[in-house]
Length: 458
Image 1 (tube, helix red, strand yellow):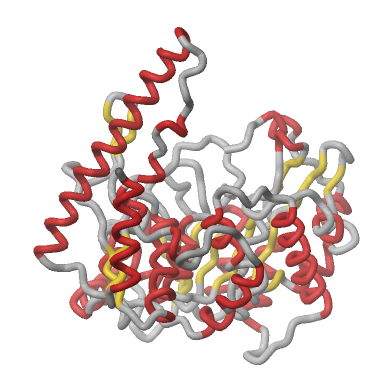
Image 2 (cartoon, rainbow, N blue to C red):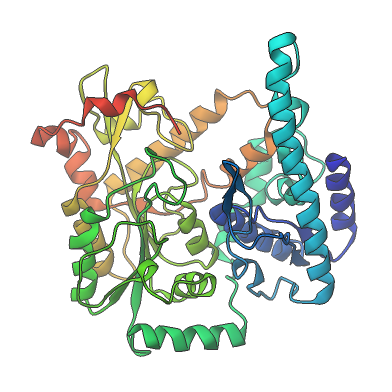
């Protein structure tokens, strides 16, 4: 049924000046990513896009009988405006939202009930089909998603088609969305109450921890303590730092010109979006928060990232550091040259069960890359090392694509391909110099806790 719904809306979208999209609104980062590419699609097709999202009977994500009930991650995100979007703040869309909420709840509940029933039946008849019998990815919330990257009428992956899409030019001409004027005014008043003068600039900081997703170990997590020296570099340059996140995060120590926003009374969906949209730049690791910053096209310092594609610095203004990779088979950290030759996929570098442990960047490395970002000239050019690493990264991505079975998941392959040759960010110069031939942690004699190697992938 849901496949028919997707095909129906796809048919309408190809013949109508309005694109209809239901971003994955229950996931903060995926929602922002799909909105960005929805706006890009609307622009290149000279159309308007309408973002729809479900309404639920419960306002927030919560537990019920050990089951996490879904909810819209941030409703203010879905209400931002663009010259390429249609406002969804009206009664008609509100009614459609309730219909979507009911449809998604039924789909989600059916999936859970079928999963439990299937496990019981498999004990009697092992040939009962697995999860593919009912795939929640085909829920009504995914309308328009595949068409964001995969052109209409294309069934197979082709680099020729990717090159014709000219993603680099699309990124260069991208126009970020904005808050509604009344929302903007309300948020500006709250920011003044937070203590940041309207004449001062600020940077946002997000360091992923395990509290929000309740994952005790995750390759994307990092310790906020390693960012303290970098925070001081920003405040010394005249800026403020607003740490974003949720109340489960480790509190920051008191620091001048620093606001530990998740632990203040100002924490709200509106301020989450406003602060991200108005910061001068954004410091973050690999997390959904970086997709929100990308939606608003903010310059970014991507520290502790761990993949070749989605998490790699996107724009020429962006700079980053990858995590250190320790090889269990070689009993040492890998140099950057070796990482460029390793068996690492597009999204997350292999680790733990695959024989690798990822170790986060040091406090000194984070401080140095932030200072490099703050002091580099406006019209800077990449060094030979930065160019060499970027070229090696593209070779790695092309190798990964050559090894894939392109018979399935074509839309995701086009999604990943949009970040292969088109991204123009780079690693920090000093980090490259210190880790190119020999990893800096290896040189210092650091060893990760071997216990981490026994922890499985997320």
